[in-house]
Length: 162
Image (tube, rainbow, N blue to C red; front, side):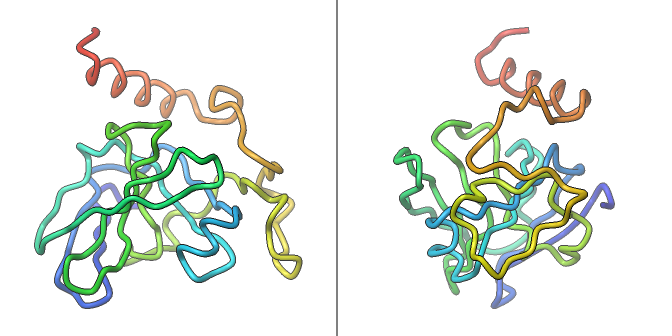
């Protein structure tokens, strides 16, 4: 992925840019992601929210349910309502889960893991080269060291710790 990947909504009103590569990319097969995207899964690139630059347009937010019951806040175009990224209750506002289908080049962010595969559609074939888990996983077990360091730094900055 280029370090300044851009994306936007379906109508073109919203444009955004990622200031760096994401920390990790999930392909989520939970039933709520299926329902919310109208697809068999959602591919989300996890990045620090401060690294998303809104270039044009207006976004709105709304809360949606998740399989965990904790919910998400969906950031979407105010005009066409395309979902652009989400904030999960467990990750807080420090991190955003960018829906990679809204990137100009979604192929630049292939999944690092497939999660909630217990509810994946039976006709979806998962690649053997990418980890897959029936639910969620321990971040420390799979994220690269530089991504774990970014995650820790973002959390520390959000809480005022150094």
